[in-house]
Structures are given as structure tokens and as C-alpha cells.
Image: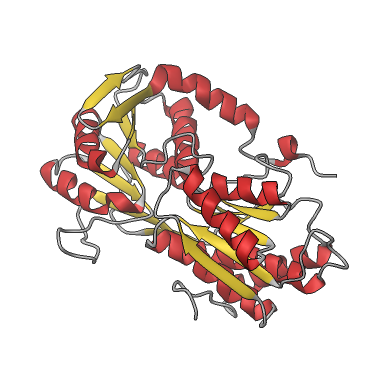
Length: 360
């Protein structure tokens, strides 16, 4: 029997703890107006700041995991903290600037801060920065620029996407006779936020490996153009379900994507979460494509505290437990889980290399 409140590694007990912590720790930034409700506490001379993207700390995924790793390091090292939540993309430069003024190490959470971190890191060469899912990008450029004070951190999301894609495709092969909730349409889907590399990587692996398992499967892909507004992702998922009979919806849109999982639950189909184990959101969430953002943040802070900061790109993959998939619900047949595990073994051996771009 499924036990959503036990199996979820980042379950309600962490959610509650984080909500309590927010009252004492978080600086929320809104444009140029900020309210400091805690700021820099701690006994260490080390100062570390974390700037979220627009999804915020309560996105149940990417930003949340960054904060989990951040607070774990804080509990061990006792550094002075500064947490800033961005309300819009226009906040990124000002928020990173505030963070750099207050801290020795600054985390930018999200690919969309690539240009902002380039600008701010150049302005504060004595401070260190780390960007999750991105790199420093110069104006009018799409290429990464190596800066001595910026550590790019990335993940092979396509490997995690591959595993949940293989699992979903095997469930479609099993069919309605084995899984009554299926419609028999042989169709699955993905709801992305924006068409940026981390999102594309997840969906690329999902579609590629689903088609390897089940060549005739239909894989629908849509983008909400948002990472926070749950209604947008819910509407997109409802369209995929109602008009195209999608049986399984993979959300790759941060906090917005929770709306896609809500839609799947509402319509009696299955959902797949992203970044963190999101099985606690609904019983219909059968698994999640995971990446250990928490581990990357934690290890970077610990290394920095030991004077081991490096601007060499760090890539977290399946081979080193940087990505994977969450425990499955009781709705997932043994053969579907076995298929995901089979593909994981192939990826680790090098015999299967999921693409970073979405196949036709």
C-alpha cells in the first residue's frame, strides 16, 4: 500500500519546518521594495545568500530543494544567512546585488538568472557565486562565459526524464486491461514551463525513452510560458487530457506545474512530478523525475567553507546519484518499474544516452 506521507523524502514534516523557518529567515524581494524579516543570523563569520527564481520557496520542487540543501548546510556550519525570493524576472539583478553586498557566497537558483549573474559577478569580483541550472551569460550571447568567481551547476535532466518516460510507456503497453485508469489512447504528455535547457532536457529524455519502449506511443508537449501560475499549467494539462486523451501528465514547470498535477488528479489520470518527490500532492502522482538540487547546494557550501570553491562546471548525473526517479505508487505495475530500472542500468553503463534535445 502506498504511504505518501512516509515515502516522500521531502514530505510534510520538511514543508512545515520550512514554513516556520520562513518567518525568521526570509527576505522577500518585490521589485525595488524589500522587507527584511530576519536577514543575517548565525554565529559564523561565513555569510551565504540564496536568491530564488519566481517560483519561490514553496514551489514544492526546484527552489524548495535548494532551500533544503541550504538549511542543511546552515545547521552544520552556522553561517549567516540571507534568503531573497524574487517576485519577477526584473528583480534578478537587484536581488543578486543585495545578496552580493551581504554575503561571501551567493546562490542564484535558476537558468533564467544567467544574464543577471554575469552582470553582478562582474561588478563584485571579490565575491563568489553559484548558479543552479545555468552559467554566466554575457549580454547578447547564448554561450556560457567562464568567470573566475562563478560556479555553474547543472544536471543531466534527460536521464531522469528518460526513466519516467520508460515507466509511463510501459504502463501504456500494459494497457487498460491491466491498468483500468488508462483510456487506451496510448498517449502521454508533458507540460513544460518555458522552453529553456533544463526543461527541454527533461522532456527530451521523457519522449525519447518512451518511444524506445513503445514506438507507437504519442507524446504531447506543451509550454505554459510560466513557472508560478498554477492555473496556466492546469489549463494546458486539461487540454491534453480532454482533447488528446493523455493518460499520464509529466509536469516540468516548477510551481506552475502543480496545476498540471491537479488537473490529472481531477480527471482521474496519472501525474508525474519533477525535481522533488511530489507524491504527497496527490495519490494520482505515480512517481517524480528527481534531481538532487539539495545535494548540489549543500556540497558547494561545504566546499566553500573549506576554501575549495571552483568555477569548473559541476554536472550531476545518474551515475553519481545526481538525478533519478522517486519511489513509485501502488498504481505502477512491477514491469513498469522494472523497465525504468533497466534503462537506468543502461544509462550507467553507457549503452543508452538520452538526448538533450526533443526528438521529432
